[in-house]
Length: 405
Image 1 (cartoon, one colour):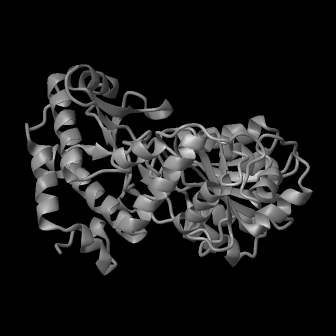
Image 2 (cartoon, helix red, strand yellow; image 1 turned 180 degrees about the horizontal axis):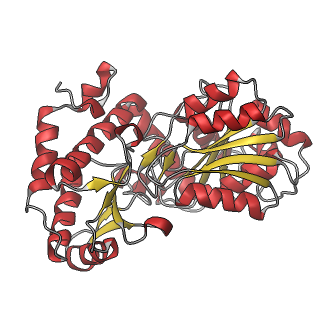
C-alpha cells in the first residue's frame, strides 16, 4: 500500500530516524577495550530516566516480560508470598507468571477500567502482621485498559504500616512517557522495555534495581541463570556483559537517551499529557464515546482504550483501519476483547501525527457503521491543542486540567 504505515499501537512505537541511523553500525567486538564506553553511556544514561542516583540499571537482551521474571527469581525465595492487583491483561500476566514460577500469589481483583486500589493494598499489608508478603507488585500503566496508577500512594501505604516488602513496579508503557521516580517512591525493582517510551525496536528488557533488592538477591534461593542480577552487576562494573549484548540496540538506546535528555524529561512528560488530553477530547467530546478508564484519575497519558458502542466489535474497526487506511490500532485483550480499540500516543509523536490516527479511526468507525459525526474527533483534538500549549503542564496542574495556557 502506498504511503507510510501509521503505527498507533501502544508499543512497539515509532522509532525516530535519528535512532534508526544510530543503529546502522557494523558489528564489533563486545570484549574490546573501547566497548565499555558504549555500555557506560547506556547504563549511566538510564539513571536520570529512572530518576535514581542509587539504583542499578540493568539491560537484558529480552523484553519487559523477561524483567518481570528477573525481579521475581532474583529477589524472592521459592514459595514466597506476593500481592498484586489484577485490573488488565498485563497485570494479569505478571500475576500468572508469579504463580507458574511457584510463588504464593494473593490477587486483588479490581474492575478493568480502574487502577491499583491503594486502600485494598493497605488493608492487606496491615493485616499481614507476620510479614509473609515479601513483594508488592504494581502495574504503573495498564496498557490493555488505558489506566494509570499512583505508585507513590502504594509506597506511602507500605510505609504507613512499616511493611518491609519489596516494591516491584511494571513501568513498561510509562517509563520515559509518564513521570516515574524510583528513589523518591522507594521502588525496589522497576521493569520496562525498549519498544515504548524509549523509542526503540523491541528486544531490550530495561530494568533498574535498588540496593535493597540487590541485597535480597544475595540470599534469595530461587534459581536463575540468564536473568541473574549478580552476573550482570559484576560484568557491568567493568563495562562488559556476561554474555553477548545487542550491540545495535545499545547504540540506539544511547541515542534515544540523548534525545530524551535534550528535550528535557519533564517536557517529555508534559508533551505526553498534552497530546493525550487532545486524544481524549476526540473520544469524549468529538465522538461522544467512552473510555475504558472509568474516571479521570485513571486516565493514561500513553494509551487511550476506546469503547465501541453496543452491537459493534472493536476488532472490525481495527481490521478496517489496517486493511483500508494502513493504520495500526491496538486490540482489546482478554476480558475487553472486541469491546474496544486502543490508540497509543507515546514516544516520538506530535499533534499532526496523532491527528492522522484520530482521522483514520474516524474513517474506520464510519465504515463499519458506528454513528459518529465525520471530522468531530479531529475537530475536538484540534480545538484542545489550539487552546492549550505543551508548556501548560509546567504550571503544575498538567494538561489534564484543560486550562488554557
